[in-house]
Image 1 (tube, rainbow, N blue to C red):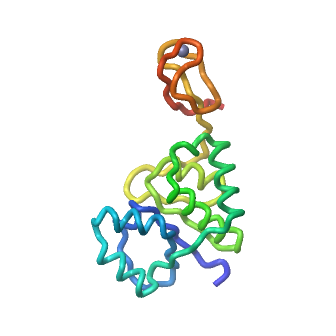
Image 2 (image 1 turned 60 degrees about the horizontal axis):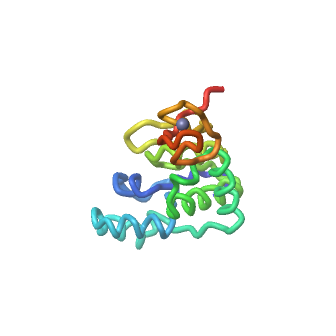
Image 3 (image 1 turned 90 degrees about the vertical axis):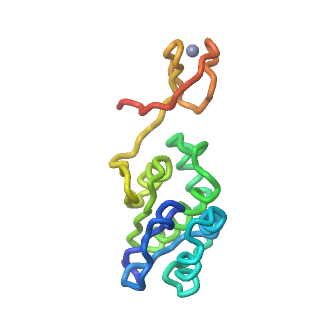
Length: 168
Ligand SMILES: [Zn+2]
């Protein structure tokens, strides 16, 4: 099992993927399955894949979850990650710690960015894939002052802020 590639799928990836028994292992977490089933878009296909173990459910460790939270805080992605996203990244990180070759499949920009920072590989479902880790800053749309921590209103002028990539 060691060294074998594991694909870790988020909600969008789950909905668009075809599941067939094969050499690659496919993993997700309960919270993602809940989102997929709640959406009611493809429950039958997903439940079949789960019952035949074509997709395996993993429960992330507390230490990995804490590592993911800390990393997402550093990159500024934490406010944009759902509980399902955080659990998914933690489950992926568990696999990485276990010596596996992990690919996170997601179109979510913040999820991809945090995954890269954690040392995971990322693959987009259909859209763009982040190629490098980004640091975000928050810039006031009115006066242009920038902040390194997430905030929605500028403390100087009260203007709205927008998240932009920090130029290094
Ligand atoms: Zn301002």
